[in-house]
Image 1: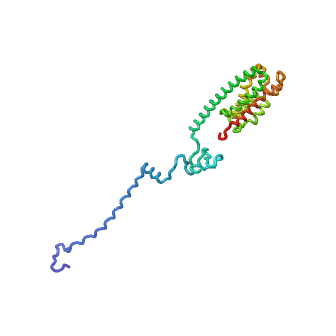
Image 2 (image 1 turned 30 degrees about the vertical axis):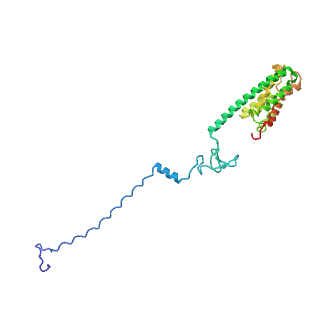
Length: 274
């Protein structure tokens, strides 16, 4: 019912203003999308990694890259069993000489060996000429001249650096001496050469002994009046000499022992620190 004094609208509806509808709650604003993380650049990543990682010294192998084994020859070093490289046990620094330096050292050693061998052969040639004149004048003493010159030549080889000293390398002496004793210097020298070729290894001192003796023997033997056929007729000790002189025959076959004696006598010139 309308109150007194209120004007009733013609359409019969109430003149009271309409109650506004409740406002719906505001929708929640969506959260902003997360900002993508910018990846580090190569320079910044490398710098961060370098700052975080421990400093690595050049030449030091990374930890765990190989299982080190104790070196058999150097007590303060370890060896990589795969590559064979040696490293200092405390610092990890490699102790191997670079390949370039090794090649340079080998070239220097070969050049020095060629130079010293030339000096030795030049001196030996001069001595052979001198002793040949002596054998020409005193043919009955040519065996003594051969023995003396072989001792001197054997003593000269190690100090000149042509061969190692006997106390440093006596390999192959154990079977070179029987070869000389049984087969003589010519056949025994050829037998030793065949053995060395088969093994791909030889003692330079033994080679020098055979070569030196033959270089001395034949010129002095010819100077004493022996012919080529006579010098080569008896090649081994057990072969009968053509003139029946077994003493001279065996002396010629076994005088390489004089070169061996001279080689070992060269130890008097061997310095302790060499």
